[in-house]
Length: 179
Image (cartoon, rainbow, N blue to C red):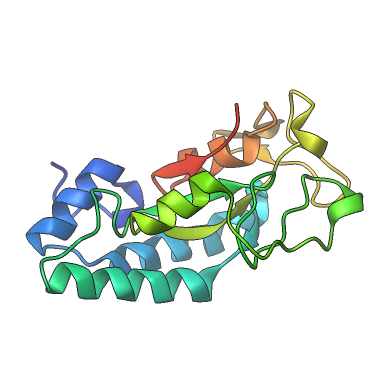
């Protein structure tokens, strides 16, 4: 397991879960490390198109409390995760990368998102995708191009390029995507 000398944004979901269970790291501290990373790099990458920092902080504090009581909900409890912008998350816009849905904010979660919440995962925000997730690169008229974190001259590729770029850049160890 990586030591605590490793920044939390660099840790895998497994390592984070082990640190949370052992009490060496709190979910809220891991989230702050990731939010700092997002603030520093997302303006260049455009991977996260809707940040849910306040809701994520609340969820992370609730996870802190469950770990303090020795009652985590699952191995995913406290793990930061991003959700592709074609999957509905209650209260967060879901545009499908299309101007037609630029203001759409669903009232309920899609089933995989609901299951992640029930497991205690911390939803950090929504990641960019191609319009209607139909093109093999991540660019749309609502949010623009997502860049590759390893080479900003390149796109992240795939309709889930925002999700892939987010994980590669340390914006969370996991992402829910559709390809």
